[in-house]
Length: 316
Image 1 (cartoon, helix red, strand yellow):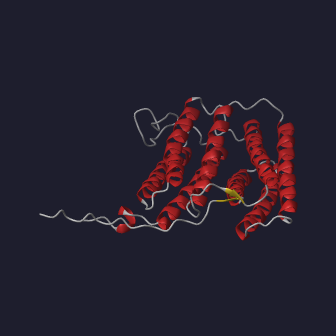
Image 2: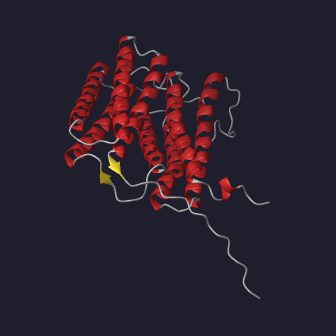
Image 3: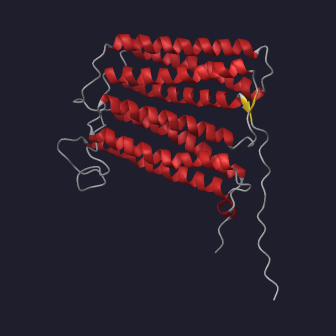
């Protein structure tokens, strides 16, 4: 039985839908990961790759609450689902015609990244959720979210050498914005590392004053807002595309929302629900910053799909 066309020769739209699914799920697993932390379920499965010694799935254990097992095991299962979707996206990009090398390379990073992230997550469990390992675990997720956003953008654009939509000084400003974004995320992981949500009650915390780390984190957020504002002022004298303007407006709105959530979270004493909401907003900031970066460059129109003609039978 021949395979359906959308499987044997997927259209660009199928690749785009799969890329969007990868992006959404990469963001989702970061949110479920912080849910593991705030519920103290980080060692719900105390070993890796098994959940318990001799068992891949949760088993009744007097020292581990069932709810913690379910939350941690569910997060691990989600990793498997993301791996499957990421692999499907890569295969679709590989079989789509015309084959686009850049798109295939970006799609290949996704399943490889899921494997790497799973290994990092396993190491985090094996070192009993040491604060530095959890920070590395999140930053790896942040990189994958960024690349997934770039992959999704690539499914809607061509393969030409990028041409700047904005002048060179504005593109350099975006480089600084990306660097500050990374610094904000790193500082955020340190705040979490010194805070109360370790993923397990017995996990040692980063021995630095939380108040100082929060101030550093806040100053970096203010630097992000300042750079974004300067970029907006320059946009008035440039000739931006509608997509770039919409993305910029979304970035402004998202960082303000994220800043408000972070402030409320701090003054309320870091309640669990607010931490999860703060992480969800952080993933959106990563995505919108990546899209802002992508929209500042033009790679031409999306190539027209081509059909592969069946080979004619040889003459006898």
